[in-house]
Image 1: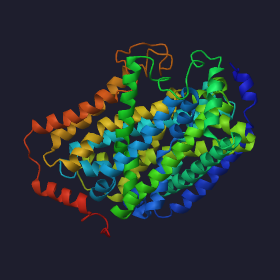
Image 2: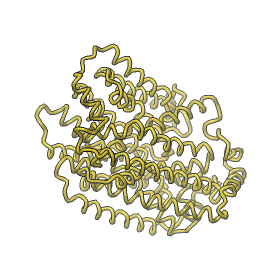
Image 3: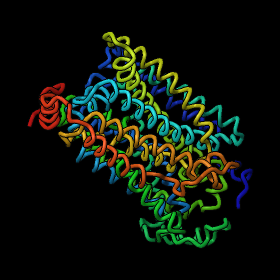
Image 4: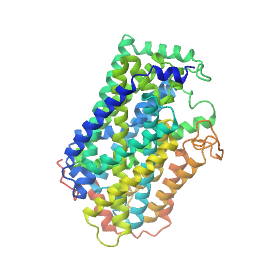
Length: 543
């Protein structure tokens, strides 16, 4: 295997990498400051004044969704595991259809700032808002964890920082930048950062895809053949015997790993429609029609990007080789940057790395504003305070929460440094799918649904997912665990979705049917009409 020392000598110019990244930060900071001239009201701070068009919001959604996991984690997983790595892409993409068909428009018509607005519309406000906000904060923290870990791995590779301390400092810098974006820019500034980043990321990935195809005479079969040769010639234990086009390299070794794959697939497909930072994006458009348009744009961009990752992953296997990828400072996550260096030297590596870093910054900013809005709007204004909280007070509390969340994310990101980012994101999806999705679907589609059903479903889904994650091989008892030396894993699956998601759906039904139907039928009828027609939402919809 290539040694770390040899690898880090050949991986571009750290000064150039820092320079290109700093340029991006400066440009986006200017954009954020210009966009945030008006951020006084809660509407402007949390939803950008609902002033974004469908295409703009669609590009921003793509920017929010295409995280470090998509770019670094999936490309690396395809390069090392072949077919099994691509399954992440399929899961992430198909999930969008669930969000579009079941949730997007109805949610936009019913809510105002946060997911809790929808869930508590016809139920008891305080307990439901508290539960929804708790879930939002938990999912956001899990997702933040993944992005921070991505930042550590990426910088380890680019700046030749191999010590844990150095990587921890970098994670802290990312956290501080994220806090500044949110404090200064609010949702408007964050959205523009996401739009810039989405354009750069998709353009960069598209450019690299064309370069890889050009190397192999525009013949994808050639890439697959070369990737298989590189895998077969690997000196790393367990890699050489893999078939890049056959399933099973990552999830086919045993019945447990096959069930783990099904669990992962369920979490990915159902998780998107429960991700608070994605759902909140639907509130930044003026009408339900624009919400639908934004999802169509998002699907087109995200779909194109995941096709690019297929070429990039197999291209990295063919041109870089699994040994170099696994031997590099960022491990599996370093496949895309190493491929960029192989294709275009220092300049392309610097650009692609800056884009990957921008990806991390944009996503963490989106997550932070969602979580802080949820705390200020749902917990502080609706649960903690009995008096009517002013909008200015909500914005102030939201900013304080953003700082606290940023500090927490830095601490947890340092702990999770070195994990596969796509895997960490999959855990966030499992929490979102179990804790949020059943309640969202029941609230929108089931008239009989009541407060007890909502609370049982939300808390049951959240607690069961977290308990199973804590006692899974993801945390202890395996080589890649978060706590390598310990072993308290009694649950065999790394992703708990196959147990916790059906459990949350069942708890919602049981809780509802064992409780008297004491919800106001007028409010329930109002919610149904409003969700289906858009009447009473921010603006009338042109049909």
